Length: 328
Image (cartoon, rainbow, N blue to C red):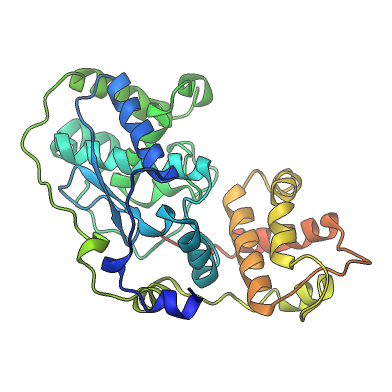
């Protein structure tokens, strides 16, 4: 089946299931982690158009594209990245979403102390937020200091850190105000251990089984919502480091992904460990390289240290101009 033919399929017609997939295994693993902690909750999970835990629902939607390798490739092709495709990121996202499910199942956001610790969950979500990388009031789990975006996300991120086996969070967050949140959550989960869950909705909002959208419609909407293009601010530097057109040589996007860990380590030492800014710049550079069709020169591949200088300059500019960051 060609890409064009694939895009003509409706979401509801995709022959997909969670069982037997890597993401399905991740869901089962985190369910077992809940059981190991004494929580009598096994959240429902279904294939949806994106990661979600709808308000009032003690279950999570899992992106449909994670249920098949071909759809993972399509997601990368259409959106230039694929959230949750790596085993590590997938399990982190499931733990985060299960945090929301636990909040909903036990209606924790109604508790006065929960509100004092995390804030009011009914607070509207912002379109953008400006993270404070140096803040120690929040745990660090998902990229982007996501706990800072909303009280419900603060709880879900704190829960994910607490739930992770052998996380040693007391040592990791010693001296941080965030430790008080973790200790409160530990006390709260001990209170809820072995507590039966009351009646809860079995609804599955945004399940692909009920969507008549084609994949083409889905991606047009998603691109409009999140933006499919990348800034051209890097073009001059990228064209100096890489060359355009078809031919031999590794794609520039692949080259940058392969050296991403090394670049993060090098650049973070010179930018106060502001890893979010580094990650954002790397994502934008990788996406722009794909849009421009850039490749390495087999004879003279770029020097990773020269790229590190470029990332450092743009990361510091990102921080010093206090650019808003879109909520993930």
